[in-house]
Length: 483
Image (cartoon, rainbow, N blue to C red; front, side):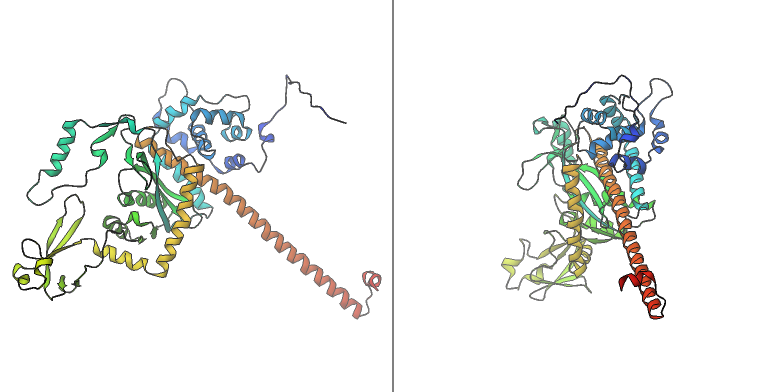
């Protein structure tokens, strides 16, 4: 007989939200795992003692996390989605007939709370992961990705001419030979976005230029938990961000008695400044040297004992001092010959400069590059590079495509920093709940195997006992039935 469903809305209904959300639901498990009550005291300084009550800080962060867990980038859509989901309402602590906060409240609260609150929230989640045994922390893999800014290229305008030429004059005014320019001129030195002044023009290889931010993350190689996350300006190199992201990671782990010992990164993080910083922190770096570094000078041999180079004709190039090249911020060591040393040389015409002597320069950070290259040429160094690719790159892909980090819909570097931290929090929480389930399942399997082994052993002992009794003329009904 064909059935037909009749529906008539009830005027009175006995309903408990906690009874309708399954015990294995993600948000129910997350509610049991995550305690954010500490946020109320921490955010108290941002509010006065009179007026309307604000949104609960715990509810605000839970709504934010829902957005990043569900890959939703609109505050309006977050509230709309949460209001229709019983598991999300249970996670938030709202009843089914209780209205959620207005979506504009999320935007105002995000602007109001300082970055320190978001960073403390990130550290709180990281601490839970550490307490579950998910983080070793001693080895970190670092990488970055562009995050699309909420601004178009059409919003770029040229900076005020007076400010621009004053900046150029400051970089060029010292003509006496010390420093001609402090650094290379960047696009952002001349142009600025009227929509988002902190956004910077950058470009991926083979892609068109656009306004971006830099998302930097540091991932533990054990269970791929994010231990450091931040946003930075996109018009700089990765190597200029090394100290910031590694320094934040060290601080995040310091409170949990974990010391970072090794850092894995790609060639973009290679620079004398980065390698020097890591060595000062007693951290071993596994970073391939960039292509611009040449360890050898063709036709010249370095004499370490006398700190000089010897050319193919046996002439010595002695150390003359440290200087800074034009358009560069790094220093170099200068080695050159005397004018009289090269006069009779058969290579005089092709080897020496217009002044009649040969000069070569070597970066002042050569010892750091050499130690880094030595580590990378070992079997462990090659293994660390494979490990880096298998650790941090999948995490970045997940953040960009499934945790709403691909584009920031706010303005300014501070809000971009909060954006990256929230995406990293959502990722770690997803790992935390999954790890808890995997650990529980693993324990169940182990207990099942142990019980099976014990049952099988008891059955075997019982069988041997029956045989023994039969041999000793103690006939049991169980044996007689088998005969």
